[in-house]
Image: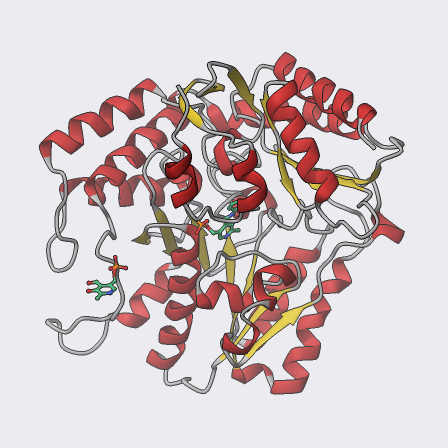
Length: 440
Ligand code: PXG
Ligand code: PLP
């Protein structure tokens, strides 16, 4: 059976070449474990585990059952001034999984909403401390914090910004990105060179005075812009400079949280504690949309002033703490712990790294980067057709090799399941090699 053309035509797809797609639509009708089912009856291996979302695999029985039970018990509950039992239970599970010192979590519905929420919390925190002059927000080139106005403004991916240029938030600066081919091409894991890129924050503190900067937001490992692990010592240095000037440090862990880099959070893996941690995706294993913003105790406490009956944070979404999402989150977090998922993910890292780096020296590949179970392969762009080669690899993988490989322009991105079989990681790269060996 195939979706009727009028239906295909009606949908304006996100981050998609719509006209190209509609010539030969790639439509998925089912999923199970590590595979998707297509409407033409094929089974595809999912080498991107959703969109970084579904580390435990698709239709995980425990999560499916929890969602089915919850939707029949409490389909929706208001979340303002009253809330479902499930969201409190999830809050405790999230904070228990976190390093010490983060005991409060706010719920959103996506990573983009988490970005905007975290920036608002940072501004509100400073104002509550009578430092309302701290209004500047600092992101980083090549950063991705979603598509809402706050996240887009602090984000640093040119295509996501340029069409909306005049409408970005004011009072935003960007640190330099840390990618450097000359020094760090084909690094395995964290590059040894580049901690000094963090000193770019000193430049901004000198320009504006550090006392006017509210927060710095970075992905501990950049994902969307092509997997950029932090140089050794970089995050530590950023933390030190933030402390020196009283600037809040926000880690956007929408991709890195929940096992993608072999720990509950990147903060734990790197041993660098930010003030605020954003998450989404793996929080529910992608099953129901949900995001969250977790803060250090002191940030929450700072808001808890004034009359007790007064609202402390004028912020929230209709679906903040949705009971069905919360039920999915509880089941996902229980599965991570009981199945030893983070340890399993960590155990796959070396094999994944070795397979990925076997592309060093391929004539179409210019750089290879990895950290945890995040991997990027840079392809040589076709002259005058940026992104065309990457998209062709995605399409050939889909139609000819029965695997889903994600391309961000000419960068191929890999996000294997946290519970992958090593032979499936090998199989993924064999298929990618076959495609790369046969395209121009
Ligand atoms: N922050 C980070 C670090 C992200 O990776 C978001 C915020 C936004 O989350 P939402 O849920 O609003 O999409 C993200 C999302 C890719 C890819 O191909 C990455 C994301 C989304 C879709 C594709 O790398 N990251
Ligand atoms: N627009 C209107 C007119 C609304 O009433 C609301 C919420 O009540 C929103 C936007 C925000 O929607 P959400 O809370 O789902 O983000």
